[in-house]
Image (cartoon, rainbow, N blue to C red; front, side):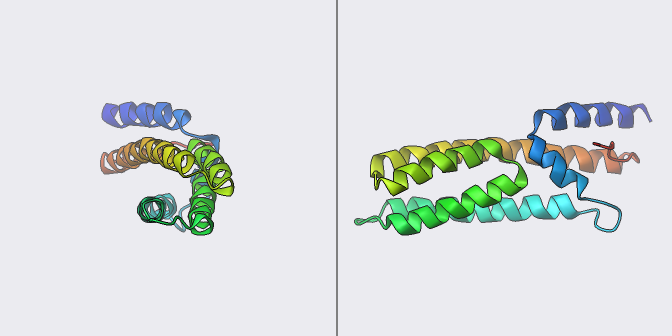
Length: 146
């Protein structure tokens, strides 16, 4: 059972490094829906990668439709905020400012920052889900976060 205790400690150390809002999401999970967080995070990954692809394509157009770019950024800001990806959300806020100013160079730079922040949080969330899976497979339970 020592392996479970080590994994649980690693889990707690790791999750404490994640964003406060994510803890709120984790607390919504209960016995009636044990895969809630995994499902929400998986949807966030799919949606985010679609939005990144859409933003990349929109910014490569001969004539950039800033209204469309702003719509994608707004959607990304909302989904990242709801999952607790504060740094992604903040990068989207800056991105929106450049959209409003119709500044293509600023938008391209912000897209790079949004991608960077997204992939950082994605790696953290994937690690968190892997640790959860290992704890459960070793016969343990996920430590209470409250």
